[in-house]
Length: 319
Length: 261
Image 1: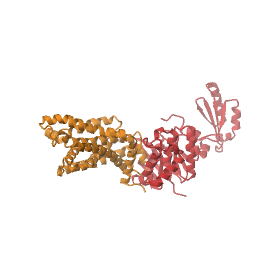
Image 2: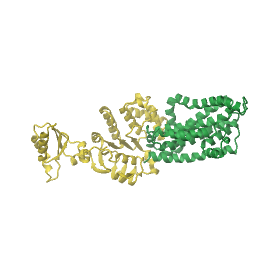
Image 3: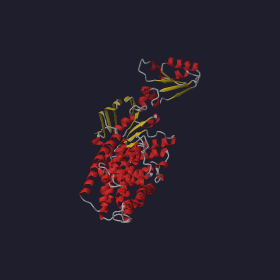
Image 4: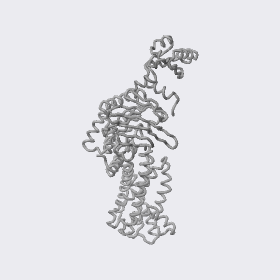
């Protein structure tokens, strides 16, 4: 087996008295897109900060490209790393092309190589006709693409993407996804944090869900869905009719699946892969549930990572 | 090849220079206008009055403007570097997150501090050189040692740039700089022997004045302009370089503390 790109074992970090990363283990393998999911305050950003050398590792071990993350290795690690940060930190006073040129110079890339690289990345980001424009004139989607292009200037072996599409409209988001899939095909390993479960499902080969500084689930998107949610989800919108809500909830509970009541929605998760003897195993066929709920305003859908995420981290607001 | 310390610092310097080029005209008017106005208004306006009262009207060799010009040069360098290393660097450190963007590359804190300080000192050199040219044109400089004054401005710039970076690294908001400019920079401006010889102060006040880096900067600048470069001038240069070593070390430490946590 090839050496991992990132390996964290028992990784910990505390700020003042708060432990924000409390013993985290994970591995990013070559050529894979690895997702780090979790609500606000889960410890994702701190984990990313540690592995990009922005925050000293407190305890446990963390290696990137086989090098322990520490001050002595920071330069060597960062020369092979591409970071697309969550906060837009492009140089507002420089043009689009100059942003890339200056960034190339930080890696010791200059002259013809830099010009070729900048031209290539402007095309990749579809920003060729904005090359001489200043940053404040760009749209949010253009800025995100430029940040992504900038992170690729040194042909990184690992691309770290911290919420790469937050705040983008669907068109802009899909364009970024397309670019990221293109990169994945080219073999770049990626570490992605996101709040968008659809994004994780689209891009990640494997992912972990973090909460309160710990990893609470790990697997491929499909395996996580199968393990934590099941095969089918039936959502019934009961409106303000409390009697209807109680009736639907009673039917669902009688069916035996896991039931969640969120606002005026009653959600029934049908887990077809329950263990033998598990009452939920009886629900492998959604037809029983659908006929029991016939006439109710229901939606029968496939489960998503969002269901996994909410199942694991709950529905309380995190701020 | 990954850049080393000097290469890294020069790349940070280049980044600052490139972003300054976009509005260098407005920046030049601000950086050069004020010291030149001071030199002309105070040197000739107030100078005539001082010279008349000292019974020295119209004599050029020891006129007040001659006394004043090297001090204005030193203070212009101080102000240019201080503004750049506070408002400018603080913006890059916080709002624009420019330092964070650079830190994601092989360039480290030491290179960022050195490059940013070198940039602020470059602006100081520009301001100091402009004052020098005006002083030369006005016949206020009589020694070839004045050729060294741009270098003196660069050293002064580095001292105040690194001091400004220390202040920026500890600042929580732009308001903080009001304290720094009022309580530190302005005090130096008025009590470092720019406008009157320190010998007119009581001994204890002189002792305090000689603790201010700008006092040594003014004395060094004056020695170059007058051609009286000797051991004393060398001593002033030594003090400035010693201060620079301390402020640079502190700036690296505190900027690092702020960005890497």
